[in-house]
Image 1 (cartoon, rainbow, N blue to C red):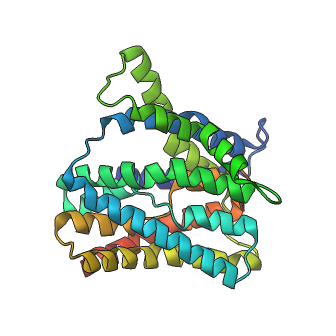
Image 2: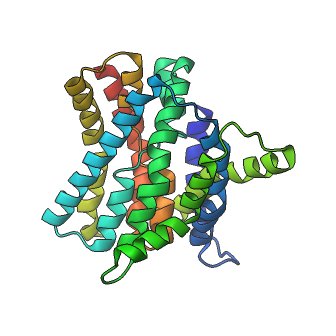
Length: 298
């Protein structure tokens, strides 16, 4: 419950700051850049080296990536069918595909299934959505934020130089390495800023009234993220004959709200910031109901 209160509080603080004359211009963009270039790399260095690859981790990872790949294909098809702009398509490729598997996922799923679900929530999050954020997310922002034609070489160069991806690669060589306190403590402090900074940035850019041309992509995005994504997870489980506790966790993870950091990424590079943040803000609120309905169905 405390996490939910904090989510609402941070968004409200950000929204309230819209009506305050701030000495800093473009605060939302500054916060988003801080999250992407400092907070997120710190989180990667703290979490990725601690993951233990086991047979039990396979199903959540398969479902996570399967849901994201199919969701991305659906976004592309619907965007083409509805003639969405490149910026809006890029926004949806992030916020309709990447799920909030940790900050929203951990308290909700733990509430539904108990604390024994935590190890598998972390596996889904770290080897699924978090890994996708650093790789797929980097590719999407590079491609859709660029004007005109972009060569594969340009995209590849931007991906390999993007801080989250760079630190992801570094972290893979740091397995089971414990950082000394003077390194670990600053990394923890930086990582802890992801949620408050990203959510305040969401609030700063949140608009309750969207222009008419953004209502369609808004509805499409939340429909894909909150309804279609869990259906994909359920169908995958049935197709491969997966069942049991771990599969329930994975399906519930797929039904979570859009990822907060995905909106930060989209906003930072100009991919429909107002729309991206509205999808995340409303998506978090709607997911409390939609995920509970998925839980009942399971």
